[in-house]
Every structure is written in C-alpha cells, then in structure tokens.
Length: 467
Image (cartoon, rainbow, N blue to C red):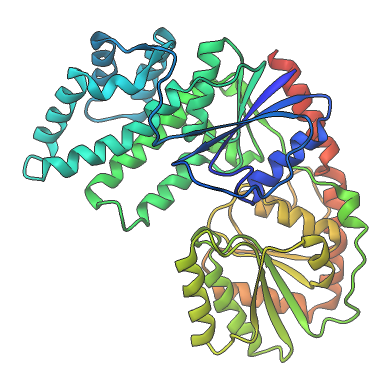
C-alpha cells in the first residue's frame, strides 16, 4: 500500500501540530509506504524540521504560484465557459460547489492553468468588473482575481505521483491537489481536517490588512466553496472531534463519509517523564506553540501580568518558533516590556518538550483557533494540569466527552479573556488538591482515549476501507 500524504505549507519544513501528527502517523505505520507531497506558495530554500521516516519513498514538492508545463491537454474554450457560468450572483457556495463538482468529474484530464488565456476568462472579468466595481482601477482588479485563481488552477492541474490512496491533511489547495490525484489516477481520496480550513481562512481574511475590505467576502466564499467541492469529491472525510464534524456537515452532503478519529500520542514516552519540581514555587506556566497571532500570545502575556501581581515567584515560559511572524514576535516582546514583566515572560524558541515538561506546573494554551492540540495531550500524559481557551477540541480534552466521567484535567476559559485566564492560573496555584487531581485525571484520560496505538489502528482500518 502506498499513501500520498498531502501537506499545505507545513511538513516537513514547518513545525507544529499538523506536521507532528503527520510525522507520527507515518513513522508508526512502518508497513505502509508513503509519498510526502508538500504544497508550497513559491520555491525557496527551506530546512527540514523533521527527520523523514524510512518508509517515506519520495518527497514531492510543487508550488502554487510557479509556472509548470503539466502533461495534460489544454482546456477547451467551451469547457472554460462552463466553469465561469457556475459563478453567478448570489454566489451561493453550495450551488457553486455542485457545479464545479460536476465539471471536474467531466474534464479531469485537462491543464486548468490555460483558463486565464481563454476568452471565457476575459468575458468573466469584464462582467464582474462592470457589474460590481465599474469605478475601480481595472488593473488592480485583474491582478486580484488572477492571484485568487492561479493557485487553484495549479492545484487542480498538478501531476501527482501515483499512489494507492491520497490523504490530504486539510481542504484548501492541498485538498484540490488530492482531488486532482483522485480524478486523474482513479484512486480514493481521504481528507483529514484538524481545524476547519475555510473557517480558519475566514478568521485570517477578516483580520488581514492587506486584503481590501471590498474583496474579503469574495475570498471567504472562495475558500468555503473549495471545501464544499472537496467534501463532495473525497471518499472519506475525517476530523478530530465531534464539534468539527458538525461544522463539516454544513457543507458536506453525504454525512456517511464523515469519521471522527482523535489524535493520539505515545503515552508511555510522556507518562514516564520524571517531574523535576518538588514545590510549586517558583510557579512555572508553560506555553508550547508558535509565536504567531492565531496562538494569541499577547493574551497569555496580559494574563501573566495579573498573575505576577499575586504570585511573587512566577514565570511564563513561551516555547516555540519565533521566526514565522517576526513582527508579531517583536510586538510580544514590547508588550512584556511595557507591562514591566520582561523578566517574567521568557521566550525559549524551539525546544525539546521532553526536557521542558518536567519543569512545568501548568500548561497554558491561549489560541483563538485550534484543532485538537497535541501539546495538551502531551502535557496531560505527563501529569500537568491545563488552562486552555475554548477553541477546537480543548474543552473536550480538558473536561472530557459525553462518555468520559473522569472529571476536569484543568480549566477552560473564553478566547481573549485574559482576566479569567489569570484567575484560572491562580486557582491551580492556590488549590493544591485541585492541581494534583487535575494532573491525575489528565493522565488517565490520555491513556484511555488518546494513545497513538488507537489512532494508528483507526487510520489503518480507514485505509483498508477505501481500497
């Protein structure tokens, strides 16, 4: 069995939850051969952040904004016209998705990148411009639309290595590449969503300063339509927890193809770590994650200020890459200085978490968006209580699912609420019995529900199911 694992902008060059999950899955399915398919934006020199497992036969890379000569016939004018006829007011995502699904099934062997050279494309541009933005600069409008469609056309035209199964680790452009491989090679496609891609893009678009306000709705509808198309064309759609499955059902017509497969970790590796701290003083709160806006490090820093006013010996350790959004990293440093806690908030950069977890009293997660964070599972397996924001599967991990009556493994607070976050951190510091019990519950929950063995068994069964 050969599986093509499709990653968008992550593995093996960017560390994080999705990359770690993929590496763990491939490394633990030793009898399965894998092809890693990396979907990037533009070619650049990159350092691998992971040691590629031995059962990975090939690392295939392609870039959404590069120019390729795909081994496919050029799209016909009539086919291009059919594509653009789908995009009509009121631009309903579900209706457009059904139209694109039907067209893609019919013309699966074409090079879609030639669409921008067709008369149909120019007719579409002129109509959109005259109907909605007649007083704007046409050149700017043209380049905006071109920037939207080029990565989509490349993703649909890529000649992927032939595999027995394509497994995309998101929808979006990676999912479109998976659709291309499925339709061209006649192989099944599985899509796994850690977070819901189109919802995450919506958050980014609404907060993006570089996107003109007039075009934000178009971008949001574009990504939602992409997800709906990919949901329709994949053979199985998986996610990590029930709440995400409910979001998928909004745009997935066939509910039977949806599976919930939780993350899993090497329980023994983390459970066997020996806690180095003998006392809660100094009180060490650890945040393991990339220093990027979506992780909302600033809210963690503001909560640290409040905790420091109550706990004399207190430190916030922020452990994760700082080079992905360097401007945001600098803003975080400035905030810590402005709050006079630069000696309390410490940035470690990339670390070996196995060395750091034994030093922590609490794990803090302040994100505004997550899937099912591996760092929470790792900390819980180590016996560390958790304070997390109510995003993704965090509440389910900390408080348990419906069939789980073990109790709380920490405290969940609303995103951005630094006051309640500080209150939760103080509760765990002050209540020795709760802190101890939460750590024990976390261990039991991971051992019972979230081991790597269970995860691998579920994906192995899924691969066999689609073949």
